[in-house]
Length: 368
Image 1 (tube, rainbow, N blue to C red):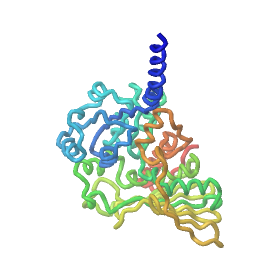
Image 2: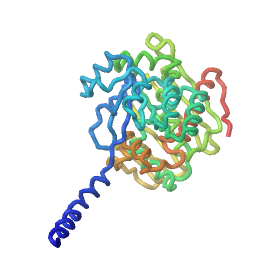
Image 3: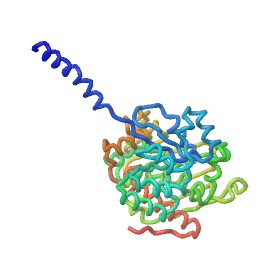
Image 4: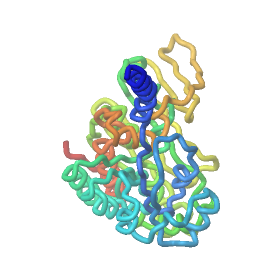
């Protein structure tokens, strides 16, 4: 009898660590991908398996496109569905990522929010304030996370610049200039499925103005800790009407704050693609040149410092890692975070005001 009890205790002691390891192992977030026409979708399809998410379904009625990407990325066509409803019923995702038109973001929220499914959309949040307000109301009603993804959110340089501004290293903000653009989607040779809606004023909400203007608005609202600009003034042009007859391909947006200005330059006309930011304070400046290179000069008497930064730690280095962490309550986004609904509602308000300003030639005041 004693031998039996001894063996039983040994078994319990042996199994305990295994049981604990199994219990502590994180389960991958089940994610559905809605749409393949936005080429940013390669970001999630070609992502190394980090164990934090698992793609359980894809919605794409264009089977030629789905097969082309399946061949490129190795997913099974068995997980590709024609509709969101079919994918949700079969795959039961916990969250979805939207890679279709900006106009379709509202439909994604209308379908997924009532089912308690969390959502991450590509920038910008919505084509208009009308859509954005409906999306926000649905997210709040059904208690889901609604995040917006920008490439520049994952730049270590932008986060160091933000920290320097908040610590007062360069003094009070005076001017922020954000440049985002490239030589044009047609000139870049993007695939037809993306081009069809990116150059459509309804599906994309405009041209270069929403496509690239959203980046600057997102960053400037963040740097100002959620404060809205007092007014918005914008000038747009279509420099290449033979290529972009329906939308603008050049935009400059000026945001007026009580003691600073934000200048957003969005372009489909630059010879070399860029995503960078210049921040000027009362005492010094900090330039975020790209994802890893940053320059700053803290005062007139200081030399310019150049640094090459490492990637941010997981899950703050990747949109889908962040989505998983937020959904699993491992991270709570700070107010007016770059990915947050609060920040991105203001971004859409700025974009709407910029469109109105460009159309009317007037300065548009924003309601506090």
